[in-house]
Amino acid sequence: MALVVLATPDSVKLMGMNLRFPRMHKVLVHEKPATVDTALMKPERDLTGARDSLAFYHQRLMEGPQRFWLPDNDIRFFDDFFKAAENAQREHRVVRVLHYGDSQIEMDRITLRLRENLQNAFGGGGPGMIPLRQLVPTYSFNQSATGSLTCLSSWGQGDGISRDKGGNYGPMLRSWRVSGSATLSMSSSRNHEAMERAKRFSRITVLFNNRGAEVNVDMRDRKGGGTFAESCQESGIHSIRWVMDSSTSSATMTLRGSADVYGIMVDDGYGVAVDNIAMRGVSGQQFATANQEQLKEAFAQMDVKLVMMQFGGNMMRYLNTDKTIENYCATLGKQIDLMHEACPDAVIVFIGPADMIDPHTNQSYKQLPMVVESLRIMANEHGAAYWSMYDAMEGWNSMLKWKSQGLANSDYIHFSTKGARVVGDYISDSFMKMYELYLLRQQLTEEQFMRLW
Image (cartoon, rainbow, N blue to C red):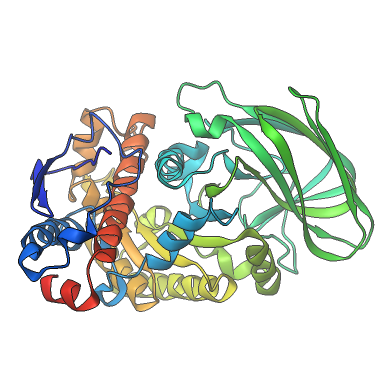
């Protein structure tokens, strides 16, 4: 296996062996970390290598700029997610990761790198959950929908978007109401930014709220010729799944009846699925608008084990006093609490905003460091890990440097396509370093780990 490091050292001792690592720009994590010979760990005299290895991970994971800030510094925070991801293929499961965010993750830009790296490590494929109609194209998947469709959304403005008083939005905080019939055509993307594992799928799952009438779903593999049909007459939240005999890259689906479609999960095999849920212009306060009982029932059918909430950038210009920052963090804390209640089996990560340049001063927004620190404290206090884009970029005025290197757009707010890939790799590397430590910990007794850590 190839491990990747972003900063020195270029090598580290692991169980008495000197291992060298290539740099991020040469290779990414695409395989599971090498296993450790447990026989080397048992005698007390052999723990020197473990001590050196743990010192390396401690520096990277507890002190580095691309670290996770964990509630109570609990290094076991991700254990349940890693266990579920490891066992997914053996247990014939698709473990889902939901990546919510604002326009920084639009077009699947950051998420596609995280998806590819996690699926290379744990298995799985496909582009993940998609809306019935995609208003903003993505790099990873092509789709088009026709028919009698109404958009029910907790966010966004414009013609064709309606609010729902009952909060019937579902996990994507935006659902599509079918009244009569609708047809969805979908195919893998040929865009050069698309990742390989997203180009094939063998499982299509329609998640919907039946509005009291019979719902019929017909699907067809446009390449292999396979077909599938199923109906549902019961009211409430249901899912209809087609598992194909082999993977394909193109399919169509027709729905007839009356239903609110929460999303279509397009996956390949068993393993990890990573869903990109981009919401342009949002502040992260929209989760409270969704019907919590419906949300909980939908999450239970999806097998969600990790939720990522990436927000803050759209509020920066308004957070100009201590009180506005305090109020915003308090509101976001309530959103995390709601997510814990709706999805109790998932661990939650809050990703703070990137560096942003104030057009009036041509420097970072002066309140940005305080916002980043306040969000970190808030996330940890509400049982979520925190990952800082601001720190990962190297902090104050780093957006100027990123723009000069072609990693950011001319608005000094959004990443370029290249920059988004870098951020996606940074987040992926942080997860994989946590996983490597998780594997190393399995070779130690609890007493040994606590003494060496």
